[in-house]
Image (tube, rainbow, N blue to C red; front, side, top):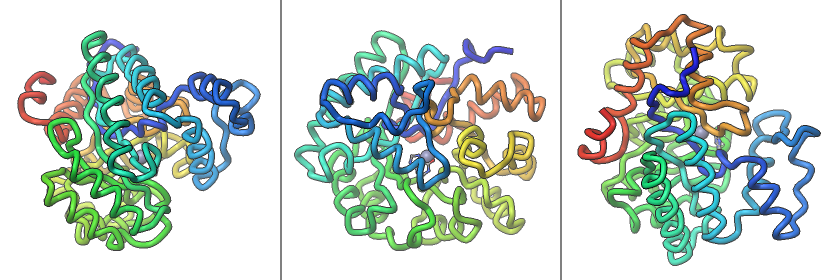
Length: 322
Ligand code: HPA
Ligand code: ZN
């Protein structure tokens, strides 16, 4: 079945990673930046593996130079998501790319993004909230500046703090200061863990960063005691099956552990991560899970409910999603 008309809630979307390739090409032309090498002959983003993906991602992001560019990006991303039936999306936004970690510049970018999100909500009904995100391979010192940006702009729109980037570099605990700073500012916490590193990384995320949600987390499947711990603690996994297959973690959806984790009592949700990079959408993710595991309306209603419960927005916003 087509899941396009089914209202969907998404918790794990990188704002720059959702940039349509056409928009990035247009911005590159306008600014005379040469990034032709990041696209294949059909105009799709092209990369070989995870480190290469991160480089292509940063090259694409390099054309987003001003707050107005982020306003255009936000409008394009939300229009696409709304067309795909997404009613709520939580987007990772990186002050590293929006003003280089400078607080005054970050405020300008955030203002432009929020205005564009408000316009998209008025036009298409889609609701967006932001999770300020540090980038692991930029190191713990840079992450502190990003956490300060997050703390200073925490509120009903910036509702969370997270970490993405290369999980194979350093330890989760290296970033504890930043997560403590964000927690003290009242922000909800999530980090990428158990994607390109194994169960130990997920344990560190729980012990050292004290997050309530985990980006991916799927590698926990290799550790039965950890599966039990996640289930008992009610930790929510932001699972991105299409992303995991596209980046080579699993050969296909049938080999993906989402069904096994769910059966073991772990709270799972479904997201796209970086949809044009991985040539996916929320409705395609749902269709893939229907094909691979026979999931139906009842299953997707549970996933959506889990996502609304775990969303970082306030109770009044959640009520509008139920
Ligand atoms: N993993 C880690 N960092 C990222 C990703 C991802 O899939 N996408 C954008 N930043
Ligand atoms: Zn991600």
